[in-house]
Length: 144
Image (tube, rainbow, N blue to C red):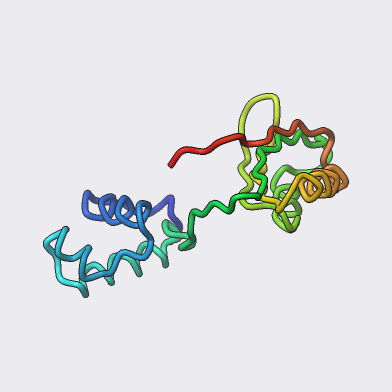
């Protein structure tokens, strides 16, 4: 069963909302808020994982000196965009890869320890097979 086939109800949506705010929220706390048993919450989360709705549990963090950037990528038409995306995920500084509509085909969100690391990252992205051109933007400030 893929995430496209799963029918989510209001409880599933609420669970996703709680996890989005804090992926470490205990099942007992969610159960109390949702007025369900802990096992019911656990079963629902396991079903969402199995179905591919929940793909990973992660953290949102900020380290003082790190540099985040958004890199727009235009691909060569001769190479499928998903193939380029998979290769971009292998670049060490890559945090997220999104295939998008518009002038660019892919958006890469990157995290580097400094500007030199970002430059190295951009060079590696540009040398990835299928990448035609890039447009990079350094993130100055982010909001929760």
